Length: 533
Image (cartoon, rainbow, N blue to C red; front, side, top):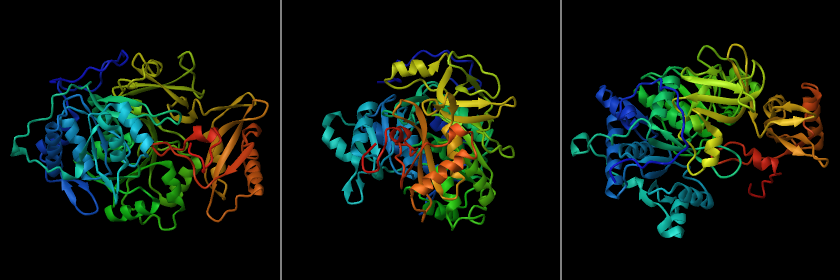
């Protein structure tokens, strides 16, 4: 096999690309090789707890992984799973896959067995980069691979790969084309199994130039630190690709990101950019050991993955005084295409369209809506994916003539500021009027007894839909019927009467998707912590 395998994705009519790229283009060269040619080889690329790795050392590690993959028969166009904890091996392995002309498929290494089997079968991966054990026990990937037998990808122990220097006979990266597949990213939907968006080399260069450099203004003196892990496309960009494109430094840690772990890493690494999500923002503003001193090195923080309630944004500003840039991105567009800007933040909004992207609010027939009306988000730009692997009907619905038609509901004012209203399948029609769950959630979050809240629609006995609030109370707060009634009254007196929650359920935790988002579908089905969603 000597070339990239053609994959029959739905035909797209793309606008003219607005980023000029050469005929042969591989993002391993764009993000890593270019740094060496520019004389940044000795700069620190990665910081982990034990040591630092220069760009030259990361390049040697990537070449080692490339050679290892080729030795075991991985060909250009083959899919290779990356199921590793964050660290230098993840970065080296990812760039090694790209250098080989293969396609990286990033998955959470801590998935349970049934989800691992799904990813194995759905992706049809040739190989997987793994750490073979989890302490004393074999990893879930190893258990599933052994049970599947010949149908499983070949598991490659990522811990035993040696770096290869430039003079050891390793050639330039495989000459992929800009619109060849580079990575698979999994849609973070909350219903059904995750579906893979096939993204191209062009996509990653486009958003790096437009958002990473153009909006965030990353430079070589920045050091980034991320709450989400690298398998999440949001972190792949903001805590790897974007900083690597300018010769900056990324801080990585393998363990799950708790607020205490994050606090320790903020003090250890003193980052200039924090890649954050609303759930962790909520934990941080309540953590007694975190204040302005611990975040003094930050020049900005980003928030994405879920909607950021205005009340939570207000608490962040009050507690830390660091600009928090809320934004919106999707796997289908790879990364963020609507964002607030440094020095130009409007809490409660997602910001405005990133230059290089065309964002519209449209009705069910695809017609543009006037300012301030709620409609479906349509977006186009050079980071549009090729489609969903193996999902022709869903691809045809979502990828239309060069546009991605999202399931997100938004409004946009005359000046282009975008407000997120919720997913189309989350929006509630209550008493004949639309209700955005985010509005009610933000209201309830302002109550002093509420730690986290998620609102979904509940069907009454007569078939009507009413708001149902699932609430995690603050520590030391009793989950009583009196508190439930108090929360209902709190919302009733602050919002229009039809918007208050008709039911309040207290829980200690929320069900989560494979990307860590609240699984609203499970809540709508009446989730119980004792029963898997």
